[in-house]
Image (cartoon, rainbow, N blue to C red; front, side):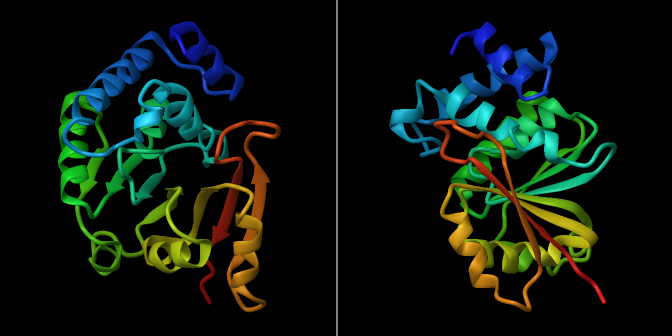
Length: 214
Protein backbone atom coordinates (compact mmCIF):
# COMPACT_ATOMS: atom_id res chain seq x y z
CA UNK A 1 0.00 0.00 0.00
CA UNK A 2 1.64 3.22 -1.16
CA UNK A 3 1.19 6.67 0.37
CA UNK A 4 -1.77 7.67 -1.77
CA UNK A 5 -3.55 4.35 -1.24
CA UNK A 6 -3.03 4.65 2.51
CA UNK A 7 -4.45 8.17 2.64
CA UNK A 8 -7.40 7.14 0.46
CA UNK A 9 -8.14 4.15 2.69
CA UNK A 10 -8.13 6.36 5.78
CA UNK A 11 -10.37 8.88 4.02
CA UNK A 12 -12.81 6.08 3.17
CA UNK A 13 -13.11 5.43 6.92
CA UNK A 14 -13.94 9.11 7.48
CA UNK A 15 -10.52 9.58 9.05
CA UNK A 16 -8.79 12.20 6.87
CA UNK A 17 -5.08 12.60 7.59
CA UNK A 18 -2.94 15.69 7.17
CA UNK A 19 0.57 15.64 5.74
CA UNK A 20 1.92 15.89 9.28
CA UNK A 21 -0.16 12.91 10.43
CA UNK A 22 0.90 10.90 7.37
CA UNK A 23 4.53 11.62 8.23
CA UNK A 24 3.95 10.29 11.76
CA UNK A 25 2.60 7.04 10.33
CA UNK A 26 5.67 6.79 8.08
CA UNK A 27 7.93 7.23 11.10
CA UNK A 28 5.90 4.67 13.05
CA UNK A 29 6.25 2.15 10.23
CA UNK A 30 10.02 2.70 10.02
CA UNK A 31 10.42 2.15 13.76
CA UNK A 32 8.35 -1.02 13.62
CA UNK A 33 10.56 -2.42 10.86
CA UNK A 34 13.70 -1.54 12.79
CA UNK A 35 12.51 -3.15 16.03
CA UNK A 36 11.05 -6.28 14.45
CA UNK A 37 14.53 -7.78 14.45
CA UNK A 38 14.63 -7.51 18.25
CA UNK A 39 11.08 -8.29 19.33
CA UNK A 40 8.06 -9.87 17.64
CA UNK A 41 5.80 -6.87 17.10
CA UNK A 42 4.03 -8.03 13.93
CA UNK A 43 4.05 -11.41 12.24
CA UNK A 44 6.65 -12.00 9.55
CA UNK A 45 3.93 -12.26 6.91
CA UNK A 46 2.55 -8.83 7.87
CA UNK A 47 5.81 -6.91 7.72
CA UNK A 48 5.20 -5.87 4.11
CA UNK A 49 1.54 -5.04 4.84
CA UNK A 50 1.82 -2.96 8.01
CA UNK A 51 -0.27 -0.10 6.67
CA UNK A 52 -3.15 -2.28 5.53
CA UNK A 53 -3.16 -4.98 8.20
CA UNK A 54 -2.38 -2.80 11.20
CA UNK A 55 -2.64 0.96 10.61
CA UNK A 56 -5.88 0.95 8.60
CA UNK A 57 -7.35 -1.85 10.68
CA UNK A 58 -6.63 0.15 13.85
CA UNK A 59 -8.15 3.31 12.39
CA UNK A 60 -11.46 1.49 11.93
CA UNK A 61 -12.25 2.07 15.59
CA UNK A 62 -11.76 5.85 15.37
CA UNK A 63 -15.23 6.81 14.00
CA UNK A 64 -16.83 4.95 16.93
CA UNK A 65 -15.08 7.03 19.60
CA UNK A 66 -16.90 9.85 21.41
CA UNK A 67 -16.04 13.32 20.19
CA UNK A 68 -13.89 15.73 22.16
CA UNK A 69 -11.14 15.27 24.70
CA UNK A 70 -11.55 11.77 26.06
CA UNK A 71 -9.24 9.42 27.93
CA UNK A 72 -8.45 6.05 26.37
CA UNK A 73 -6.55 3.04 27.66
CA UNK A 74 -5.29 0.57 25.05
CA UNK A 75 -5.32 -2.84 26.74
CA UNK A 76 -2.58 -5.26 25.68
CA UNK A 77 -1.26 -2.67 23.27
CA UNK A 78 1.56 -4.81 21.87
CA UNK A 79 3.03 -2.82 18.98
CA UNK A 80 0.66 0.06 19.75
CA UNK A 81 -2.50 -1.12 17.99
CA UNK A 82 -4.99 0.47 17.93
CA UNK A 83 -3.89 3.10 20.47
CA UNK A 84 -1.12 4.83 18.53
CA UNK A 85 -3.00 5.11 15.20
CA UNK A 86 -5.96 6.49 17.15
CA UNK A 87 -3.70 9.03 18.86
CA UNK A 88 -2.20 10.16 15.54
CA UNK A 89 -5.65 10.52 13.99
CA UNK A 90 -7.24 12.11 17.08
CA UNK A 91 -4.52 14.22 18.76
CA UNK A 92 -6.93 15.52 21.41
CA UNK A 93 -7.48 12.03 22.86
CA UNK A 94 -5.34 11.16 25.87
CA UNK A 95 -4.00 7.65 25.26
CA UNK A 96 -2.30 5.26 27.68
CA UNK A 97 -0.73 2.15 26.16
CA UNK A 98 -0.91 -0.74 28.62
CA UNK A 99 1.47 -3.61 27.85
CA UNK A 100 2.84 -6.14 30.33
CA UNK A 101 5.60 -7.61 28.12
CA UNK A 102 8.91 -5.90 28.92
CA UNK A 103 10.38 -5.77 25.40
CA UNK A 104 7.16 -4.54 23.84
CA UNK A 105 6.99 -1.94 26.60
CA UNK A 106 10.50 -0.81 25.69
CA UNK A 107 9.44 -0.42 22.08
CA UNK A 108 6.34 1.54 23.02
CA UNK A 109 8.34 3.91 25.23
CA UNK A 110 10.86 4.43 22.43
CA UNK A 111 8.02 5.01 19.95
CA UNK A 112 6.30 7.53 22.23
CA UNK A 113 9.57 9.42 22.57
CA UNK A 114 10.23 9.42 18.84
CA UNK A 115 6.74 10.55 17.85
CA UNK A 116 6.61 13.23 20.60
CA UNK A 117 2.83 13.17 20.83
CA UNK A 118 1.46 15.14 23.76
CA UNK A 119 -0.90 12.99 25.82
CA UNK A 120 0.58 9.61 24.83
CA UNK A 121 2.08 7.50 27.62
CA UNK A 122 3.05 3.89 28.29
CA UNK A 123 2.30 1.70 31.29
CA UNK A 124 4.34 -1.53 31.41
CA UNK A 125 2.36 -3.52 33.93
CA UNK A 126 -0.23 -6.26 34.18
CA UNK A 127 -3.80 -5.02 33.86
CA UNK A 128 -4.84 -6.70 37.12
CA UNK A 129 -2.32 -4.60 39.06
CA UNK A 130 -2.66 -1.37 37.09
CA UNK A 131 -6.43 -1.14 37.54
CA UNK A 132 -6.00 -1.06 41.31
CA UNK A 133 -3.92 2.11 41.18
CA UNK A 134 -5.65 5.33 42.18
CA UNK A 135 -4.42 7.04 39.04
CA UNK A 136 -6.03 4.48 36.76
CA UNK A 137 -9.01 2.86 38.46
CA UNK A 138 -12.27 4.31 37.14
CA UNK A 139 -10.43 7.04 35.20
CA UNK A 140 -11.03 6.19 31.53
CA UNK A 141 -13.84 6.90 29.10
CA UNK A 142 -12.78 4.14 26.70
CA UNK A 143 -10.74 0.94 26.85
CA UNK A 144 -9.74 -0.46 23.46
CA UNK A 145 -8.56 -3.99 22.74
CA UNK A 146 -7.50 -5.53 19.44
CA UNK A 147 -6.99 -9.28 19.12
CA UNK A 148 -6.60 -9.69 22.89
CA UNK A 149 -8.46 -12.55 24.58
CA UNK A 150 -12.13 -13.46 24.79
CA UNK A 151 -14.81 -10.88 25.52
CA UNK A 152 -15.50 -12.07 29.11
CA UNK A 153 -11.77 -11.97 29.86
CA UNK A 154 -11.44 -8.54 28.28
CA UNK A 155 -14.31 -7.22 30.34
CA UNK A 156 -12.85 -8.65 33.53
CA UNK A 157 -9.54 -6.92 32.81
CA UNK A 158 -10.92 -3.61 31.56
CA UNK A 159 -14.00 -2.85 33.66
CA UNK A 160 -11.96 -1.57 36.61
CA UNK A 161 -10.37 1.11 34.42
CA UNK A 162 -13.65 2.58 33.18
CA UNK A 163 -15.59 5.47 34.65
CA UNK A 164 -19.32 5.12 35.27
CA UNK A 165 -20.19 5.90 31.65
CA UNK A 166 -17.18 4.17 30.09
CA UNK A 167 -17.09 1.55 27.38
CA UNK A 168 -14.87 -1.28 26.24
CA UNK A 169 -14.47 -1.21 22.46
CA UNK A 170 -13.19 -4.61 21.40
CA UNK A 171 -12.11 -5.19 17.81
CA UNK A 172 -13.01 -8.77 17.02
CA UNK A 173 -13.64 -11.27 14.25
CA UNK A 174 -16.91 -13.17 13.66
CA UNK A 175 -16.20 -15.43 16.66
CA UNK A 176 -17.18 -12.51 18.88
CA UNK A 177 -20.86 -13.36 18.39
CA UNK A 178 -20.30 -16.65 20.17
CA UNK A 179 -18.22 -15.01 22.90
CA UNK A 180 -21.02 -12.53 23.61
CA UNK A 181 -23.25 -15.41 24.69
CA UNK A 182 -20.81 -16.21 27.49
CA UNK A 183 -21.83 -13.07 29.39
CA UNK A 184 -25.20 -14.54 30.23
CA UNK A 185 -28.39 -12.79 31.23
CA UNK A 186 -26.87 -10.86 34.15
CA UNK A 187 -23.83 -9.59 32.26
CA UNK A 188 -23.03 -6.03 31.16
CA UNK A 189 -24.74 -4.21 28.29
CA UNK A 190 -23.28 -5.50 25.03
CA UNK A 191 -23.83 -4.44 21.42
CA UNK A 192 -22.03 -5.20 18.18
CA UNK A 193 -21.46 -3.15 15.03
CA UNK A 194 -19.81 -3.95 11.72
CA UNK A 195 -16.61 -2.01 11.07
CA UNK A 196 -15.87 -3.38 7.63
CA UNK A 197 -18.62 -5.34 5.88
CA UNK A 198 -17.19 -7.57 3.19
CA UNK A 199 -13.63 -6.74 4.25
CA UNK A 200 -10.76 -9.21 4.25
CA UNK A 201 -9.53 -7.73 7.52
CA UNK A 202 -9.44 -10.02 10.52
CA UNK A 203 -11.20 -7.52 12.76
CA UNK A 204 -14.58 -6.79 11.21
CA UNK A 205 -16.74 -6.34 14.31
CA UNK A 206 -16.70 -3.74 17.03
CA UNK A 207 -18.18 -5.01 20.29
CA UNK A 208 -19.24 -2.35 22.78
CA UNK A 209 -19.42 -3.39 26.41
CA UNK A 210 -20.74 -0.65 28.66
CA UNK A 211 -19.94 -0.06 32.31
CA UNK A 212 -22.94 -0.10 34.58
CA UNK A 213 -22.83 1.44 38.03
CA UNK A 214 -25.65 1.22 40.54
